[in-house]
Image (cartoon, rainbow, N blue to C red; front, side, top):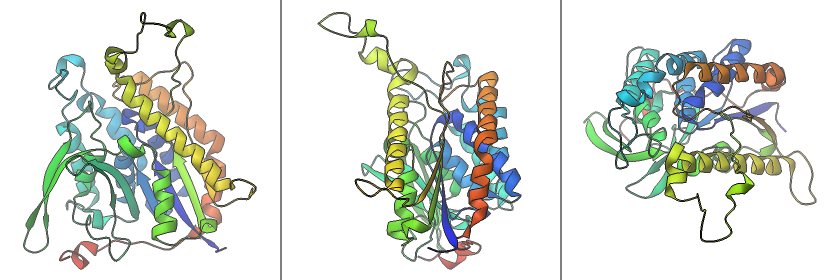
Length: 356
């Protein structure tokens, strides 16, 4: 066992509920007295967690992303009468405002130069899904010699891809330039990584152990959710025959239950697996790696992924502050107990790798 630990931060998806991990991490960052990127070897994120992960990897304070969401909530998720377009055959929102906000925030953090994946200060794994090739995609920094396929992609485009939640936003399409010859590369039909990995904790664990060869005993995995609703129905809706069946398309589409339910179920399943894997299985009951999970169960509180109600966001941030008050010091002590595995600096990587 090493005196250094490979520290992974994983952040779930959840739309505007990203203010929960943003508030928790802003408290942690204040106590660490240094950017999150300088304390973690790998940051993984999905959807809103992917936006936050990329921002943190650019050394943007978590509090800045919290502020961006709260102050611009009605631009990102406008009220019914201001929506760009609406209908069963259309996405619920236009993502242009969100794209402009993220692009400007990322660019400002990088001395007004468009930051690429190669410019991040720590390793990242950001989830997405490629509709054209019908397969999951994990965007990665060039932290291995053969990881050069994503390094030219602008960070804001990856943020838009990972957060293009079906029904809420259209699939994200754009293009970017590669190398001195400015070759144009298409970046088409990308959707939210939450369709396969709303909780990317196992992606981080796999990357650390299987790709980078980090022993499990030297891994610390910190996972943060965006809040968990309890989905249950009354016994009066139990279906016994041909009649009184409320569970058709209308039931699942209204309030977009099906997407939220599937994403939250996946997040919970990954958490359960991490508990099993970290503590051993079968007759082997010993600590395999350190695992910490921060999540908020919603009891009598509801907040949609596209809520723009300030009072609900404030309550969610209050929950995050309370959660930090309960668990922050133990997590802080754990992070400070060991050094990072090694320093990852991507300064000048765009120039080192630009011709690949």
